[in-house]
Length: 164
Image (cartoon, rainbow, N blue to C red; front, side, top):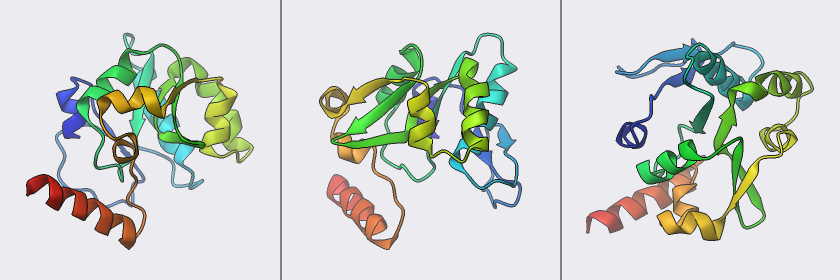
């Protein structure tokens, strides 16, 4: 949230209604309870953006990406069209730029059960590879997801190293 604010982006949180959230000072947009798919969150954010005439895209960031920075978000927001990051051979659709105009195609992709990577791939996104992303810092760290206890230990280790 801090990175989005520092980038001067209008931040929102997208969640399922059953999700326990801390007090927030940004709008909360609720996605449908079913299906359980990350595209539901992207589509909810795009629906929120579509109601704002000056907004044509969203920069989506997964809640488990603690090292994303304001400069990366601001830069992604300024690009045109859909954008996906690629680290080595791995696509990173959870830190990406999604356009409002592509929502109908994404709804079809969701209905077909496509993965996030496949859905974003249908949009023929611009690909930002690691060398370009590295101008903002360690690309692997910027795109790091905390998905399990080992990832949490890695993130904590980086924070301790930063503080020391």
